[in-house]
Image (tube, rainbow, N blue to C red; front, side):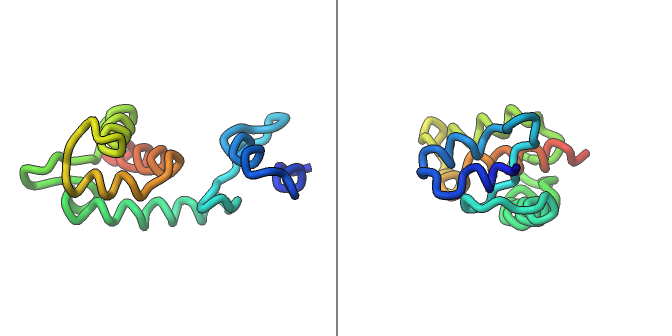
Amino acid sequence: MTMKHLLFGASSAAMLLFSHSSLAGEAAPCLIAGWENPASVCAAHTKTIAATCFICHGPNGKSNGAIPSLAGQDKANILGAMHDFKSGKRESTVMQKYALGYTDSEYEALAAYFSAIK
């Protein structure tokens, strides 16, 4: 039985709780806007939202200017920066606006994407 079957008709709080965990060894589902998707769809989604970063941070996150490169950075550093922008702890007119638009799972996916680029 899949998580989707177990949660049919469940409350939003229960769905949120189970969306970030696994049951009986099942891999955590790939969620976009609360809907379970195949991994290939989430990979395409991550590449699409990563493209918004290319405008300032350079193609594939490799900057040639004053804005730091994202490519090859430690995943934890990227996640920390995004959470700091979202909370306002780290100030930036542009990055705070972007940071507010992404979910924690999108942060995780973006950080993994950029940290894997060498």
